Image (cartoon, rainbow, N blue to C red):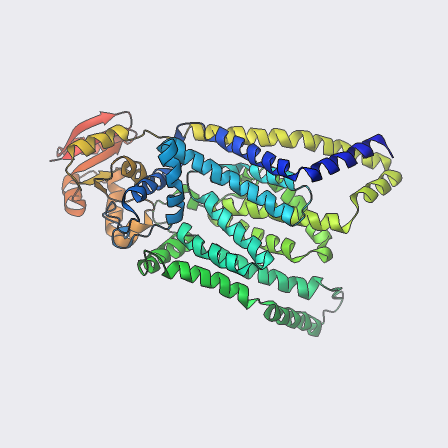
Length: 544
């Protein structure tokens, strides 16, 4: 036996005996990367201020059942804290470590736990090179960015993929519990039901086309009867393979979480707008929604997925080469990847689901390949028949092994730089301190943008605001008022501002961002707005 083979065998034995160290290694690598990304006193998404404030309010007052802080949105009438459990779990972190450090560490820990869950999922399914695939997911640029935002992204992924694992293992009681908790934690809870349906569809595809020799001889004249036979067989298998217990358990857990809820039945109206009007229909052509709801351009998506996209394309090719060897898991993750690829092209925010499903597809498809062929024997045969080709492949592999870490490191650095250029944690603090001291309680504050609300709300919850979280909530409340608000704040309307704001919004103060120079000129020109405070973040105008 050659020396390198002896070393390889000893290494495999050592790794097998120290699985705990591998789990620990994955945990600390992910923890270090995410801590490094979060090492600046800023948030990249204004929603982080909202989530932090909600955790603080719940710790002081219990569940927040009403939301008077947005006077001109539908949330004033039927607010639902769709992230309730996420906010509750954040409380100990901000209590012990403080608001900024605590919430950032909470975000880092959830992201790290999802990477660890991914690794554990792969190991439980005996996926080879599980460590490599976990790192590919960890360093995918767009995923690294999205999961590092101070939002419930990682918490949602933990619940969703825990539910998928339980579907695989037919752990019905725990699956019911995860479905129930998902509703209390994140508005995207229908994803678990979609995952269950995709899994059953994948089983039907496997049983119809792959669980036996499937060679439809359609060359030449296509026989309609043969096609009908396959369609009939597929539908028959689909009906036979529908595990109604899985569907009932998931659906039962979701319904239970929906009904046994602080916000029932208000959540019916809320989720209609959140899931259908914002999540599916999306009014980005009518209202100025957040950037995450706009389409993802394919060239940008290819770049932002990093190494995962390169491996994904290769894996897709190999999927069809080894099509007859595929199993339900690889089919399932392939279908899920296709679904979220389409959704990501529609709205950028779905990339946080597309990339994990893509990496899972790569991992499970690679397992099919490893089970189908002996890599060692294949290499020895290739080396014997085409030694020059082997040299070329070896050079390519070495180059890739050298390049991939460089790409991953660069992507992590770029992501960290993005966070360093984010929203300062102290933005609007001075403005809000002035308002808290000088404005009467429950005064209505006009503000420049809908996405300024989270920061204003975080620093000053004794006053009320116009709109926030998503402009669709204001558009659905009163489309005319939304248009007026947009025209005023974007400086498109410059006449009779005082009258328009007083009559329509009853505002007593107007917070203007420092970069809205034309809006500030319009207010000064009107003559009924008195500047009472100014700092680097903006100005406060009092209405006469």
